[in-house]
Image 1 (cartoon, one colour):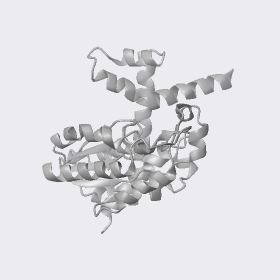
Image 2: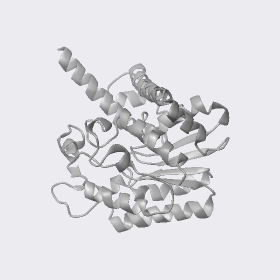
Image 3: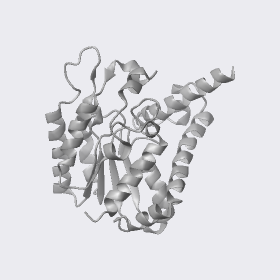
Image 4: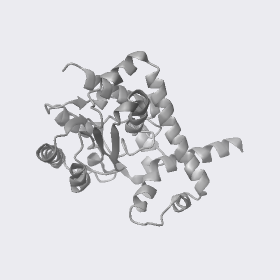
Length: 282
């Protein structure tokens, strides 16, 4: 019985972790869509739902504390080239749109180590979006007039039907055009400093066999993710190489059991890689 209870709890936590964004996005269109309505999507009460979400936030806060316990990393945070009152917008997909993501960990890191600087972080990630979908809403990012744009997207362009791999969700040439256009538009309409993030590699066997990810009859390949990463690396702008940070193939402990999304340890590695890149002399 205890094992069944543990498994049921794991499934519930996974669903809220992955699908809470559905509730968040529905709330944008329904003024009366509150925590109770969101909780009902998962068959739980509002108090339980809020407790789970708070637990994710606590995990991000704890991960930030673990990073700052490393004196060398803490000193790097002091040298990050963010100015007082800077606004940072992170654009992306589920890599960013996560209560425990690298951006949320960075938020807690800056709140502790750079509290007096008033640096504002905006999470503009939306899970499952392709670069074509991001392109349609990118004007909203530009209207924020941020000082920094962290761009971490492209992985969802590579999904294809498992039983009929006729085409990718977004072709590589179109992905390249989308990425180039958004970067050029931001350069034209803002003074934001731009930082690329490559898509991380995946563990294919885990994705295919996972009870949730494997149920969609869609798949992605490292060779397609590599092609997008190579295109991003070719730009003469700062790039956080997540394939280098998490491994290619990724270290198993740095991804969740779905073989796709970073674990808390993986998100910590992303924050370290970002700090390394922005404090390096080049």
